[in-house]
Image 1 (cartoon, rainbow, N blue to C red):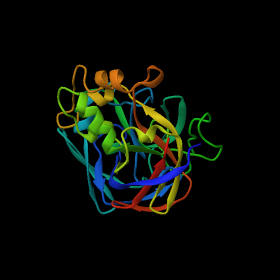
Image 2: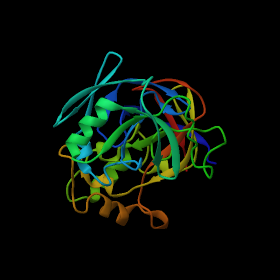
Image 3: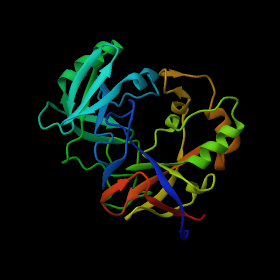
Image 4: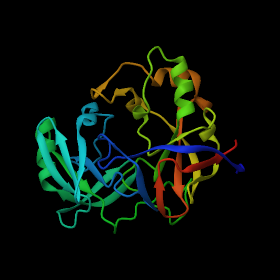
Length: 270
């Protein structure tokens, strides 16, 4: 593990209430063992219970949450529906995200709206507190848990890494392509690849794995349309150690509490 040195500040925080749908920026958030409160506690699944994401349907980027009292309104081209932050009741079901099988509750009105929007049977499901989905044991401890995120509680991104990638791209892209939770400014490019301790404000995290990227980064967040090659093609050419394009770092919380934009951040030196 690398030593940690103070290098940067927290530039932005983003929460994704529904996995693979649009996110929302906030100035502060609460960190729990599972990740940011409200992040990816909902997910869309197909009629077989398997997770449905932008890998199949880039138009999910146009499904947007608008926060209000007690939850958010999920807005779509087919209408909108109120969704509570915590779903207390709903039909129990079993769903799959990658290799994990999880217990969930169905949000019926959201399921109806999404099925209409995408013209196929879909369900909007919620992960209750009683479901303790484990992170990959190759990278986590026995008591490390995660929401419906792909694999880890938080994803950290680095403004300097985006600037370096944009230097090679034919057309610049924004950080929203990469769907991170915490974005830091003031570090060196790809410093987040180094494993070790991360501190944001007073909270500590383990950086356990650089984030390998897929074609979802080619979805234009403004239009919900997948573009042919970029930026993944350039990322493969410019930052793909061991043949895997990397952008960002997967974090596991060591402590719980509040983080706020502007907080001091320390990263491993590498």
